[in-house]
Amino acid sequence: MNETLLNGTDITSLVSQLKYLQKRTLELEEENSRLNSKEQNSIPSLRKALKDIAMEKDAAVVALEDLSAQLRGAKKRLKEAEEEQYRQQGMTGPLGEIASMGNFTDQMQAMEKDLASLKSQLEEEKEKLEKQLHDMAVVIEKLESSRQKLLMEVKDCLNQNEELRGMLEKLRAEQAIVLSSNDMRGEAGKEGGSEMISLKVS
Image (cartoon, rainbow, N blue to C red; front, top):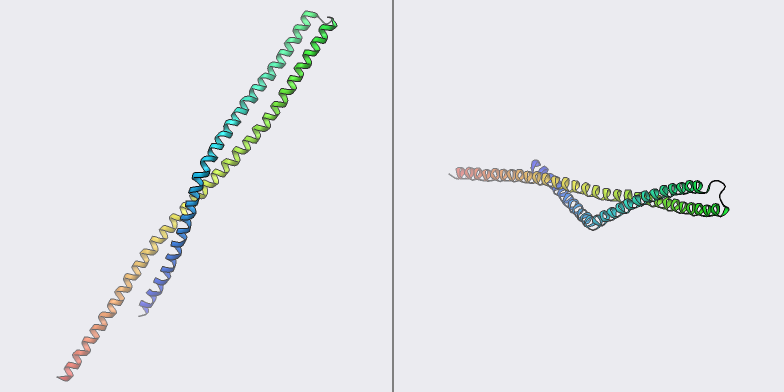
């Protein structure tokens, strides 16, 4: 009888654990479904934005290199023009030619200043794009990590469910055997009592 009561208590406990795990599994599956939906809707757009930003960054780098080349070319042309002017006019050339050369130099310096300013802007844009690339990569990594973690939790809960179901079935089978054995002993006792009565009568 004690064995039967113990088994009954164990079964009640297992049923309670099983219900909890089933509830937890359902919650995890719902969370996983939510993350899957978020992944399907968000990650593709994030990846596209990531690709677009990478392309913009590459374009900024190319533009920066092109501007640097233009700047170097402008400096080279300025130097060559100055050397050519000095060769043609000499150091004591007419004042008009010197003034003309001064204007050309001013124009080149203004152009050089504009190119330097644009180069600085492109450098800032490049740094901004690199930060955006990093931030978006971190977001994607976190989403994928959360999804993997949830999948592992769901798998673990399902495994525990299977183990508890097996234990529950085993305890129920043992309880059925005990109850069947008790019934058989009860029937045997009744039959023995009937024989004693019949012997007394005879």
